[in-house]
Image (cartoon, rainbow, N blue to C red; front, side):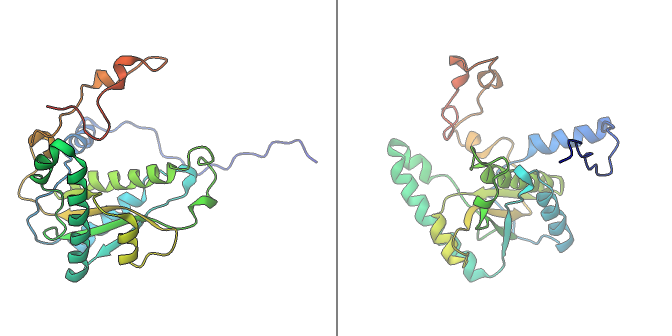
Length: 240
């Protein structure tokens, strides 16, 4: 048996040159102006633009290069109406679980399934357990990888002048059955995508005084977990 270490396989490289100042500014602008949109202006998304957005999503990083994202483009009005109904059912259940904030929650607009130009359901395929690389101790990295694809799509949509909203108020098994997904597939997001009249000046939930962005310093710690870094609850943000 040879003890020679095989030479690594190198793909062609891209020069590690920094973006220009204008290019950097555009990247940061997309990040800071991205909004979770709920209000849409109808219209259409050109096929070429939609393809660019999906390619951006497909170029997301994934653990072990597993690429666990699948996209279902919901085009028929009847199917959209059924998805809308599933979201409304979960909206009511979520409101009931909110306790004293139930009335405030019910005043929020939580979806644009019927108004958006495009609706995409993002799901993970069955057989994900076969991907061990990077998931042996953290199996949830399939979800994290798929979220990276969604974020890529979100930022690209903002750069294209489109709005996008991530709807997560649905019962996963019910949506999987509605869309005839195979056993083991798991829907993660209903994405509403399309033209908007304007972007929110700040995140909608902050604008509606549901929560506010926590200070960055509350999220930073050195060397070990520190009490000040616990921050606000993950699902509520800081109460205004």
